Length: 392
Ligand SMILES: *Cc1c(COP(=O)(O)O)cnc(C)c1O
Image 1 (tube, helix red, strand yellow):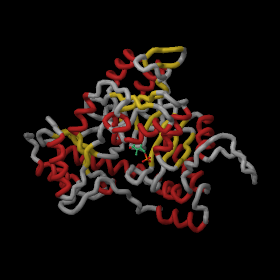
Image 2 (cartoon, rainbow, N blue to C red):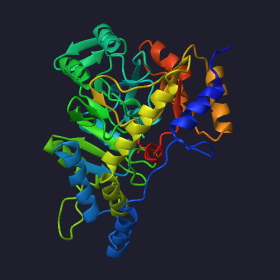
Image 3 (cartoon, rainbow, N blue to C red):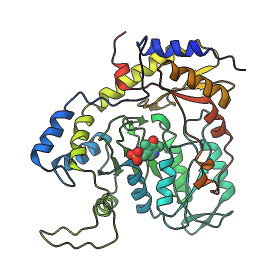
Image 4 (cartoon, rainbow, N blue to C red):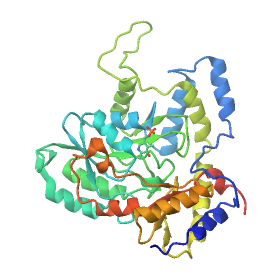
């Protein structure tokens, strides 16, 4: 059996959040700013659908916040990732390298491009990618032909790499960028969870050829549902806008579409919410960081539990706070989860490995021992930004 004192864990969460009783859900949005005013103004304008001033404004303000040349907003983060992969050339029978420990959308986006996910291992902490292991793995499996990289075991092209910043913590983006560049593999950053995080002096989402963020209801800011494609390449941004808006040639009346494209637009109504939320992003990051430091303090003296902290050289948005159980097993993890949930604390495990889901069972993988350990050990704890705003 484990030495973890479950009551002590519950006590630590209750004291760090200053909520001695009641339900604490994992992550709830804060819509108490201008959200209601902007949405009502949008309704009044009647421009609630696919075009409108909030869409244009949200794209400009998001790009400005991130320090990126362009942002194209779309219907959700999965669609953003699918289009991003398509734009860097991912297609039929290509392989897309990605962590096995990520949300299912990362793999689905590749599959929607008719490509095959190729899963690699996590950092020993369970957060992000094990860069050295990845480097060593590539040395063994990559054959370079011209300026492209191929998997010598399957013969398929390695058409992109998608690092993911787990729970908001940026991975070693510069090292990964260099590594991919040395193989000619495009890098598409899945920054769905890490809007507001930085690595060095740059924002997460801006390191790849293209990056994506998500505005789903549980993310750090929300548009109800939504996502964005972020890039410094104006031509890629123009292509992203064209392809996500039915590829219609601008004209006062003609319906002329010049290629097969998607309707992945973000409605103006959702963008109105986005403009209001973006104004509060820094405030949310600050309060999440405050909550994280309270958690860190509260867990300091608990045997067998380690609070997950931001990696060196990063400022994490601490989208989800997480703890790591020492000497873990699925049984201990699940016992802790059920004790917490019984107490009203809505904790969650991290994801099942994507390589173990039925549709991805046959996909290529590297050794995944770190990721397998992380699944047993990681538990996410209540992380709403409002919890960091309450005074002690
Ligand atoms: C949320 C998320 C996505 C997808 O975003 P949606 O807006 O829900 O489609 C992609 N990747 C990761 C890692 C995510 O957490």
